[in-house]
Length: 42
Image (tube, rainbow, N blue to C red; front, side, top):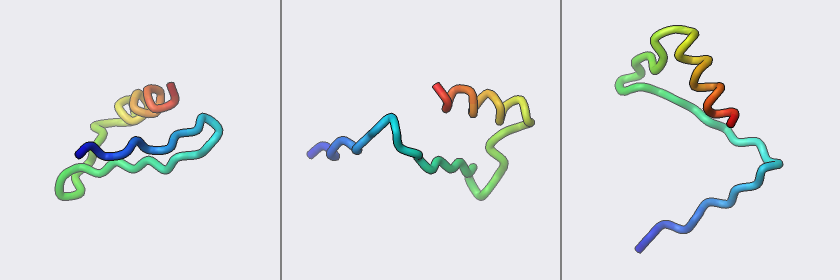
Protein backbone atom coordinates (compact mmCIF):
# COMPACT_ATOMS: atom_id res chain seq x y z
CA UNK A 1 0.00 0.00 0.00
CA UNK A 2 1.42 3.37 -1.02
CA UNK A 3 2.09 6.11 1.48
CA UNK A 4 -0.37 9.03 1.30
CA UNK A 5 0.90 12.19 -0.38
CA UNK A 6 2.24 14.88 1.92
CA UNK A 7 0.39 18.17 2.18
CA UNK A 8 2.33 20.90 0.38
CA UNK A 9 1.61 24.61 0.21
CA UNK A 10 3.84 27.17 -1.51
CA UNK A 11 3.12 29.70 1.24
CA UNK A 12 4.36 27.54 4.11
CA UNK A 13 7.82 27.18 5.68
CA UNK A 14 9.45 23.74 5.78
CA UNK A 15 12.18 22.56 8.14
CA UNK A 16 14.90 20.67 6.23
CA UNK A 17 17.89 18.99 7.86
CA UNK A 18 20.85 17.07 6.50
CA UNK A 19 23.10 14.73 8.39
CA UNK A 20 25.64 12.26 7.06
CA UNK A 21 26.18 8.71 8.25
CA UNK A 22 27.66 8.65 11.74
CA UNK A 23 27.18 12.44 11.80
CA UNK A 24 29.85 12.94 9.16
CA UNK A 25 29.91 16.23 7.24
CA UNK A 26 27.46 16.34 4.35
CA UNK A 27 29.15 19.20 2.51
CA UNK A 28 32.83 19.29 1.61
CA UNK A 29 33.03 23.09 1.66
CA UNK A 30 30.92 26.27 1.61
CA UNK A 31 30.52 26.01 -2.17
CA UNK A 32 28.81 22.60 -1.78
CA UNK A 33 26.57 24.00 0.94
CA UNK A 34 25.64 27.04 -1.16
CA UNK A 35 24.85 24.86 -4.20
CA UNK A 36 22.49 22.78 -2.04
CA UNK A 37 20.75 25.93 -0.80
CA UNK A 38 20.41 27.22 -4.37
CA UNK A 39 18.80 23.96 -5.53
CA UNK A 40 16.58 23.85 -2.44
CA UNK A 41 15.36 27.37 -3.16
CA UNK A 42 14.03 26.41 -6.61
